[in-house]
Length: 318
Image (cartoon, rainbow, N blue to C red):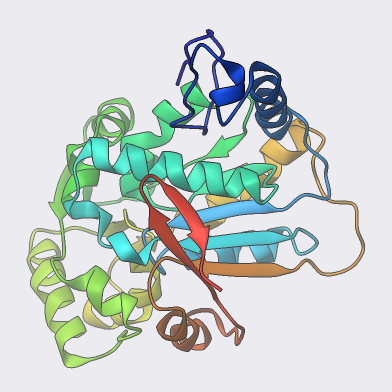
């Protein structure tokens, strides 16, 4: 926003300024201090600060897992916005507002880099965030169409993703640039995200959803499958059962982890500490339910901090 005295204050809203400073909640000097604080948050990073990772729910844990493997000494923050899952059913403007709120929260926690571990949110908001927070390093998800097009032998690739991902400019751009001469088949797998959110990775319903998507693809001769949603890598074992090993499955998470490492190196932000990094978990949903699926998804048992949306911002619940 821009306040009445012309000061740009990212992440600060509803600050009234009148004619008499004594009547105002914030004087001009206070506004200047707040602006300086936000600027420092956006520009002054230390290698010892954490990496922020977020998704609509538990799906981004597949990316967090890959980042932890690649960067064992980094401290991590993970936020699952389960109050708004699934993101695939929300408008672009809704997704951008949610992304702005999460970004403000991550910066307030000291994040030195933010990974948008959600294909839908990346397609909707990554460009906007890079424009509005130009000093913040962001890493987003891109459908792995390029490696799929390079690796297919039949020339037929299946992409599993949400409707919002397929409708986004990012997906269209990737297909246009890298998939010429390759047939691309799209499947949205309705209901699969909800199954994975509950940790139901091998139930009959999960299998039914995947069979409805995969068997027609296999009948068309698809030999390469792209996980275009960060939730879907958690059901790769079931996908391999259904396809009987006749399709190569591409999980983009390791590539995102490598890109995160490259960006940290470019900015001189790799953590030099010899000790293993820590991870803090947050959810806007039920922290007890989130904690219960962590062991099943990534083999971790820990507590989860609850957050609540208050307007456009996130606040902890004690």
